[in-house]
Image (tube, rainbow, N blue to C red; front, top):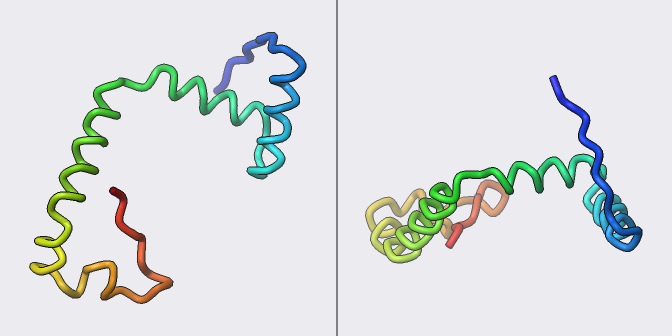
Length: 85
């Protein structure tokens, strides 16, 4: 269930929101909902994500050596999720 919320934004911001929504194939409501989710997200989660990214970046070579079949270079181009760092 969702609850309606009314906000007022300047016309220029509304135009920017509409432009971005169209470019992303979404709605202004969806963009604002995502922004609201981000506003209440626990900052510890972002800190944990940063820590994980640093760990992956620092240990990528060791991982690739230990698991060569799972290294990004060893995967098919269509299957490669890439390495977030």
